[in-house]
Image (cartoon, rainbow, N blue to C red; front, top):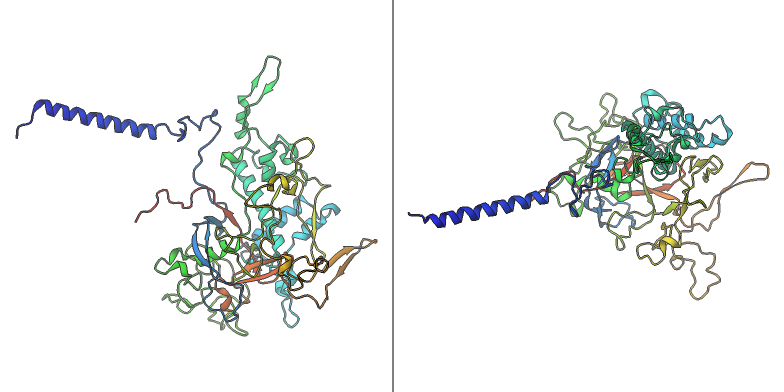
Length: 562
């Protein structure tokens, strides 16, 4: 077939133009590395002021849990016929969670730090260390010999990798805050923004590190010691300073790590109830099942607690009480390997890579307990317990720092003191009308009783009688124990023995999840929920930490396509 020469040349020319335009188009959309998708300016340089960071790194001890939807509260066995566990559809964002429960060794590291920084030999700091100590007396039983655990469980090396117990909810929360500061302190030191080995220096109460203080007032960190807090990476940013004609030194901006730097990690915290239940169920590995109906009974596959693998057939997949007087099977064939708690990682991990999400110890979660989960109001990252605060700004316009004189303690119902603010931290106050006025998403600082506990819900409420309703504080008529100090400085404890109390539920009870070494298999179901006072501890409740995920939902760079 003859081809017209002129037509052929036109065809070639047209193809060259198309290829050229296509090439230019591709080059302009992904031209220079670090250029802004919005403006084309290079935002990674010093003038841009921003840094395009990569994926969030998992903090020490954490594993990634990709978020998704699941049926919360769907229990397979409901012999108790509880009405506090109605199934409801929820969605949780991706987050990180501790691979194991917090161990005795981890908690002892915390106690040692407190002992070094806040010596209990000093009267002003005695309550700090004592308030953080686990209650080792939780092991005692009126008709059982347990002094071995009372004396040894926390501190003996044989129990180092066993989950810590005897820790109440408040203590677990304070441990999480401490852990946040130590991890971020190590990150700054490793990246050259703190003097090498700063975290191991002779730190004192007035000279310690706090993440939020560093981000908001870096020059106040370590008590304002600029020999530890470097101006820039290994102090190199300070070299970019300029000197004016009159001798004034102008230092470059952003010489300290900021939130926009992407270096520091979000806070370690207790997981929410929805996060814990979602992570324990681990439906991610059960794609053949209908995950929307929550057909998984345990953190592992199947309807039974024993392994069906050839090498471990018959062994229990968790540490729990198998029957009256049966905590660990027969001698010589201990099918769950323990009688009390067991060393972490002794049982298979679930499909998220999390160990002991059933058995060993039950675990504190962040939520305040209520009989219902109000999914009609919210079905995304559900959590009851928000108490919003803000930094207190002084007359000089700067954020106030907690000092030795302004430390605050909480007095528990048993009279024990627990420190809730430490020197070097930022002073926090509840949000006020300046933040809540004309808002639609929240209107108060304390949201523990939101859509719950109003006067009209109380059985004592009388319609048409305003006077008789003045004393009704909320619908939960729980005991109110009172601890005071008399004129001689002695503690006076008044236990509420009123016969008018109708419930133990109040704003100071927290949810705990999962079964323990003391529980029957019924409680191993991730959807089961119970509650306990936040200032009390037991020998079967421990905890693990979580961390929010910033950025993408998935760790996969490319979204899978069907």
